[in-house]
Image: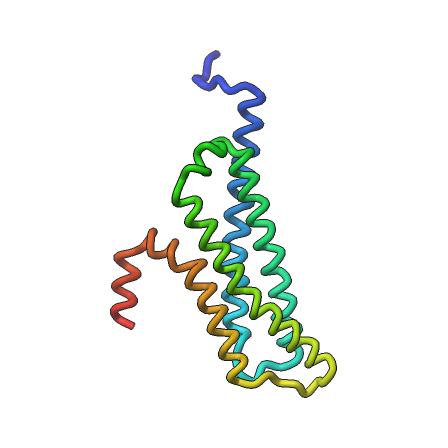
Length: 168
C-alpha cells in the first residue's frame, strides 16, 4: 500500500537530525532568555553574599548556554537540511550572529564584576556591593536583554509592542 511518502533511511536520518538540532537550539535560546531574566531579578541594591553566589552560578550557566547556542547553531548551519548555502549568504543570519556577538561582549564586564563580588563576599561575609555598582551591572544586563530579546519581539509582535510601549 503506497502512502505517498518516499523517504529513504538517509533522508529520515537527516530530517531527524535537523529536528533535534532545531529543537535543541530553540530550547537553549529560550533558556538563555530565562537566565538573563533571572540575573535582572537578582541584581538589586543590598544583594547578599548568598545571592551573589547564586547569581555567579547563574552567570556560569549563561556562559555554558551561550557556548552551546553557538555550537548547536553552527551544527544547524553545516548539518541541517537547509545547509550552509542557505545560511551563509543570508543577511538575517549574519545580523543574528552580530547581535549575539554584541550580547556576548556586553556580558564580559558583568561576569568579571560578579566573580569579583563573589570573591569579596567569600572573604568578608558582610560584603555588600555599592548600590551604584549594582546599578551599573544591571544596566549592562538590561542592554543584553534588549539586544537579545527585543529585536525578535519587535519582528513578531511589532504593532502590539508599539501600542504597549506607547501606553507605559
